[in-house]
Each structure stands twice: as C-alpha cells, then as structure tokens.
Image 1: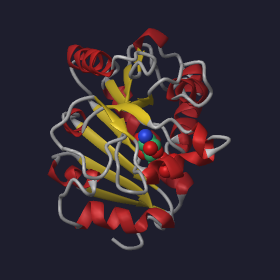
Image 2 (image 1 turned 135 degrees about the horizontal axis):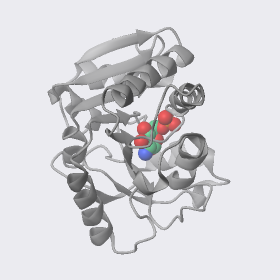
Image 3 (image 1 turned 180 degrees about the horizontal axis):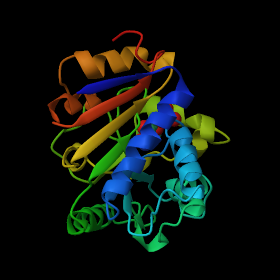
Image 4 (image 1 turned 90 degrees about the vertical axis):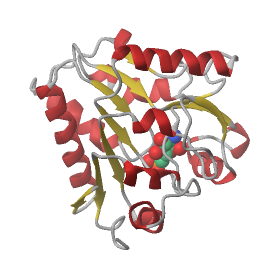
Length: 241
Ligand code: GLP
C-alpha cells in the first residue's frame, strides 16, 4: 500500500485527478471504476478542468460506478446516476453509452447485479478503481460484517450509513434502505486502486483500514491484500497513521 499525504482536501483532489488523468493519457481506452459521495467531488472538478483545457480525451473511456440505490430512478437528483452526470459526465467528452451504473430500477436484484458483473467482465475489468471510504469502513456499499467473497449484490444499508447519508435528503425516512453495489471481489479484481480519504472524522477508521487486522468488520481493510493500492488522504485523515 502506498500512502500519499496531501496537505488538505484540495491537494488530495488534485493529486487523485492527476493519477486518473495519467491513466487516461497512457491508456486512452481504459476502464475506470468511479465512486460517489462528497470525497471525490473535488477530483471530478479537477478532471473537468483538465478536460476543458483539452488535455484529456475521454472518447474511448468506459466507466463503471460502484453502486446505486435500489428504486431510485436516474432522473432523481438523489440517484448516483444523476450525481455522476452533474459532477463529471456532462462536463467531459465521454460517450454516455460507455458510462455504467447498476440498474437501481430493476426490482429483480439478482438479475440487475448479474448483468452488471457480466458487463464489467466483458469490458475486460477495471484498470483503475477510485474509492471513497464510508465512516464505518465501507467501500462501495459493502457494509461491516458482510462477506469479502462477493460480486455485485444487493445490500441492506446499515443504520450508520443511513444516518451519514441523511444529509443529502430532506429527512432520514427519505434515505433509501437498499442498494446494489459492486462486491469486494469485484473491487479487488481492479488492476489499480486509489482510496481517497479526507477529514478528521475519518482518521480513526483510516488507521484501522491501513494498520489494523484484515477483517470484514472493517471492509476496506481487505485493500491491504491488493498489490497496487494508493491511499491519497489529507493530513487530517492521516493524523492517526
Ligand atoms: C457512500 C458511497 C461510498 C462512499 C461513501 C463515503 O456510502 N456508497 O462509495 O465512499 O458514501 O461518502 P463521503 O465521501 O461523502 O464521506
């Protein structure tokens, strides 16, 4: 695991965008795994800026997002489809038909998740996977206590994740309780992984992820077993490492 210490959120975002940009430049038909949440917003802003200055060509890039809420349509501003369009896809020259997220509107969870895994496999798999870190150590929506050996699947969100995501909704009752997410297996098959972490409130969990035992109680701790992981985190998040 390589740990890259950034001065602050902005510097973390710029470093991550540079890594993703070099991936796009060196392999213009890369398959990228993308993440949502507030952490990667700054990274997407820098990538948008690099693209606007026409240094970055996304025309042959394919993307797969980690997860999507079940029962939330792509037009709903709370969906991850909507988030990705607003924060990245609408700002760059990617072909929308090459951007994939799990189909949250398919009520048949098994079918939706199996389809997603098939598409990822047929694309050749992720060259680079971007990850954020949930406050309880989740990646994607792989919650503590789950199984490491899973591909894309449907999850019941934990109470702490619902609480954390309430800030994006009018009330706690509006937060979806289930989601389709890439599994740990899917994530671990990516050739390269970037984990982004920012802020003091994630210092404790990041210490467990990086230095603690590998355990399903801290899902992101499995990243210690991957051969090419770079943690890009700001000073506050790294203050206990
Ligand atoms: C959600 C997403 C995760 C993300 C996490 C952290 O649960 N499914 O992929 O990493 O939120 O979000 P934030 O970056 O807002 O702290």
